[in-house]
Length: 115
Image 1 (spheres, rainbow, N blue to C red):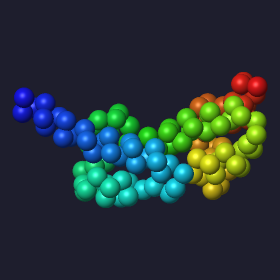
Image 2: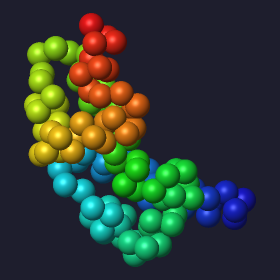
Image 3: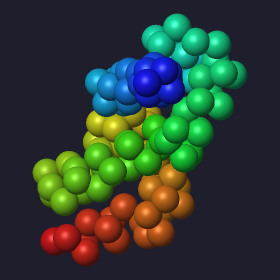
Image 4: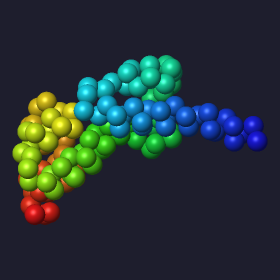
């Protein structure tokens, strides 16, 4: 029972961090911001996050934003610059580069697949 309690405690900062990301992904979020939010040392939080989630904080944030961008790309009402801004990237070229790296195709190619 003690181990279950400890495990639940360890997961709470991760749950809080994910909730924070889901509410603030449009903003500039740093590891330090999240660590402060969950009241942990940034280095300790980083190690815990990677162990629990399977990827580091930056990778998680990028993937979270890209998943939202994929949904937005299915809606032709938004151009790439607007979508980049909507998911927290002010530089649409950087967004396109990240999108291509994560998804394997460019944002406009992704949009064509779903049009």
